Image: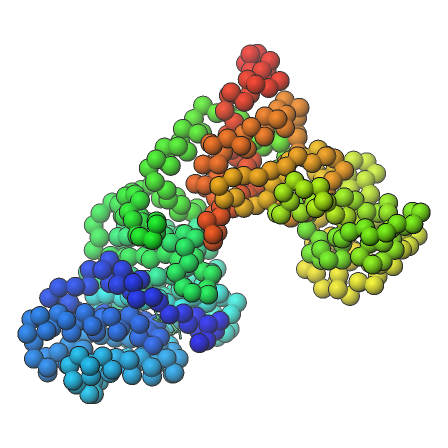
Length: 506
Ligand SMILES: C[S@@+](CC[C@H](N)C(=O)[O-])C[C@H]1O[C@@H](n2cnc3c(N)ncnc32)[C@H](O)[C@@H]1O
């Protein structure tokens, strides 16, 4: 399978049946309608389609020649890869041989590039269905990339080739046509798919959207997917939003087109929406009014910068099998895995000083003269350190991303960026630093860490993250610094704290 270059992934049968049901590909009418899979692979969709058409034709007692006529004139497929194209024809021939005893059918399956071939079929089909290729733009050849940029509107500032397949799919549909694809769900939220979302909203052509969220549909492939059903004759102001819950596709909400935001489409149940509305009501303060919330820094070579002390001698310590000056080391924990166990505290070679309350990198000459052992250790790894894609204007011996270092010399609450049932967070003293994970420090003394801790433990906060956080496999939700910063603080927390006098005053 040519996964990277051609986006070859095979669709499970139940997904194909779901899509065909959703576009209403059934009943006598389909015997006079045209359908295409514009990225047909070895024919997974077409096999189901042929099966349904034969069943329908037999129900109507059509003769063999009529059935052959329908199969040859109504069912289309395009596939760029010659091997897949051949397999597709063989697979289709096998079904008609078994089901009808016919040997040779002149299939309308083309071994061609859909990105150009589609032009021959404008306004032609009643149904366009399939699992178009998902290929990140940087994996696409330059020539095709240029074609996509010039030819397709939705793909300006392109995200992925599947958006072009949406666009060409809509162009080959006739005015009553319906389209059903399974694709990555990234178009729901990614800013590069904004034009596409705006188009769908303005034209009101979405009939159903099934977001699989963190449920993986394709074996061995981590793409998060959605089924999108578009109907050029939808004529409604709303569409059905469904999710995959407890192994079944269930309707979660009816979404009004007018309620869709341009920036991102995230849907949740009416109960969750009400919860969020209530949460924001009458709350004038948010966490970021009282706390700095930021990601820990990233060295981009943890193996070199972070390690354990295994021996010591005067002012030197044995760090990752090298003797270096102890005073250049700081205690550190990894926010994404720390569970409060002090044994997990390690050391980091920290080439920064803090002359006036701001960390700045130690100059190279100073590093060499004041910390000759540590400098020598870094020199031994210079080649490796230079390979990092580090912050602009940073020295080769600095951390790759040092943005998070300013806040680290304070008392802090730290937490990882994923949550399941519980949000785990830990209090750390000033001299223990953090990498990878989120670090919260106080901006004012109006609200203390005890109150923040109550907020982070509250059911409200957990539900807020569960609704707003991005889904990850295994039922995890991502916690971002922005989500924490924007969490509105209820007045009970303000009353509990030293913030009270100011509220009274107001
Ligand atoms: C995600 S696979 C789907 C295969 C099959 N429809 C299925 O659902 O199992 C996408 C298919 O599109 C084909 N493909 C990729 N780029 C194409 C293009 N520009 N024109 C036609 N087919 C293309 C790939 O070779 C691959 O077989």
